[in-house]
Length: 174
Image 1 (cartoon, rainbow, N blue to C red):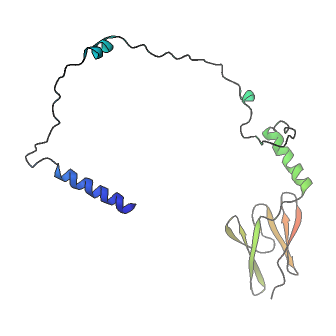
Image 2 (image 1 turned 90 degrees about the vertical axis):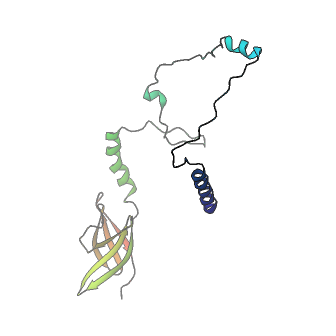
Image 3 (image 1 turned 180 degrees about the horizontal axis):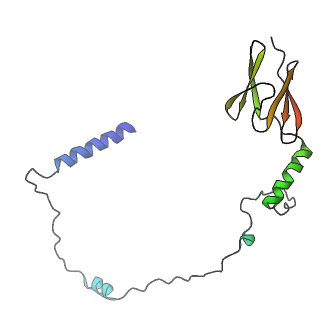
């Protein structure tokens, strides 16, 4: 495909060079149009004014945002009841910690990669959102988690928004 495009481009360049003006600056102009006599039926049609098509425009009053609804609302095809009215931003922020506390902390959003020990000072490597993070006991892994302590191949992590502990078993260390 690329060779065909290059071939067409090369042919167009050759043709443009072939038909280019001479060094004298003479440019070939298109032939002049010669007048012809039009048939009588064409003259009669040209003299009659053409009727412009008509278009009926119907202008409606603007619909309020409440009447439009939410185009991105979750849809249900199973005949279930429609969800309740959406929460206002202030209500949503107030309801979020309550719902989170009822369900407990979310699953750990990071992956354990390994550890490194040097003179009894051990650092633990994690991957969070595609980035590598190094943490020692007492340090934050990200904004929501802190590595509390390590014992018997288990990392003890604290979920900071709810102050709830979580554990991650990584196995015995050699």
